[in-house]
Amino acid sequence: MKKILSLGVCFVFIFQVARAQEETLISDLSFTGAFGGPILEFSQINGQLTADVGGGGALILNNFFLGGYGMGTSFPEYTYENKTYDILFKHGGLWMGYVQKPYKLLHFYSSLKIGWGKSKLLLEKEAPYSDRIISLLPEIGVELNVTKFMHISFTGGYRVVSGVNKLPGLTNEDFSSPIGNITFRFGGFASIDDF
Image (cartoon, rainbow, N blue to C red):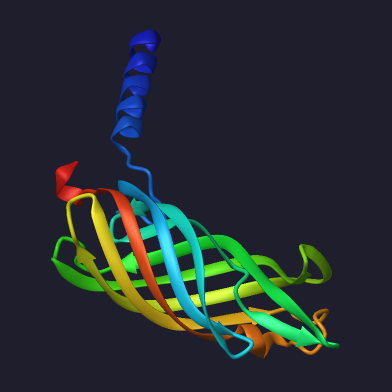
């Protein structure tokens, strides 16, 4: 009799555990795709219009995405002590964003890039001056669904740079600038209903 009662209690306990659902802070987040692609950024460095090129990729979780990015340029020039240097500016890091109603042809798009990197003054491929930097790039704009696997976003924002203190005559403000981005995203953009 004790064995039957023990088995009954165990059965009820196992049944209750099997029925229980795990509670989480973010419970309705589902993996819905992934993407990668090039990024073209227009900004100013030391008062000169420049184009940074790079790329990134991320996992899509419902209307949010989370991944990484990398950007760089060596276009701007800077004259110091009668020598003309190329300014090398590169950074990369965490990329997160939100896309509202991604199934619409044209829809709201926003993202935030939090990165770190280096800025150098180059003279004939030598870098006598170098500095580590931190960057923060919030952006907002619209995205166009070109095909089911290709989306293009057009955004504007502001790049905040911190940590520039070893480049003679240059400051954080010389690297902080309004930005305009064109981002190409290639990948799988399924809706939650597709799963």
